[in-house]
Amino acid sequence: MNVQELSQALASTFSSQLQSNVVVQNDVYGEVTIEVMPKDALAVFTTLRDDAALDFDQLTDICGVDYSEYGAVEWETESSTNTGFSRGVEPATSARLRFGEDIEPTNSGRPRFAVVYHLLSVTLNHRLRVRVYCDSEAVPVVPSVIELWPAANWYEREAFDLYGIIFEGHPDLRRILTDYGFVGHPFRKDFPLIGHVEMKYDEQQKRVVYQPVTIEPRVLVPRVIRDDGRFNGPEEASAEAEKTDA
Image 1: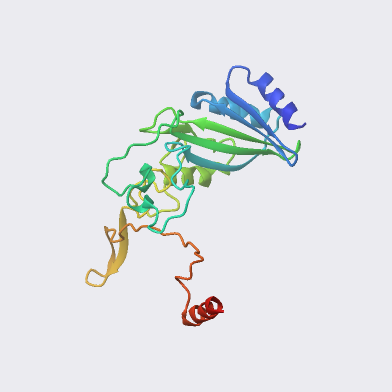
Image 2 (image 1 turned 90 degrees about the horizontal axis):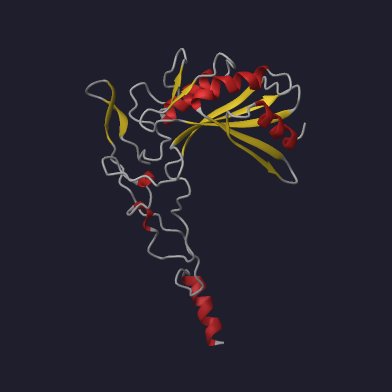
């Protein structure tokens, strides 16, 4: 079935459980995205897998999303500058704040955290994106789908590690990319780009130790090519002078 038919099939199957059912169609490809509430997620996922008309037998990816600064733009500019953008000094969004400073997230008009699932039906050759928003920002929780698709195991651990999203029912929800003693969740928008701590090997203690970061924020100055000759070397300056005299 094509994306329009898939969207209609989803609408008829989950008449009251879908918060959104969106089709994006262009000349190259089409895709369907549905949104469900955490309380309905397991029932919807079970039907998506077991209904012969849908038959989503493969889970290809799970990822977390932090929408706290959705739509915020820091780099938008209509002209170049020779003093550097102030992004490193006066951040426009909380993602650039250093640890310990007050954070004022941008109101994106939607729940802060969500989990996005990508499903594939090998038999019917169609794909689906499912977005589940977390009810709570303080403790984001969604049900684990590991019993439906065992491939969810490491995907859910990754989203927990990087975003702090809890997958209720996961049998072994531990960090998978960061250290066991890592502080915070590095893909959250309020996590500082320089991190909280840095690690090094201490010769006296003969072990790895953690300490506050020693990196100072810096202003990034974009390279601007100018035609007034200010950056010409001696040979170029001489050649330019000869052209002027001629």
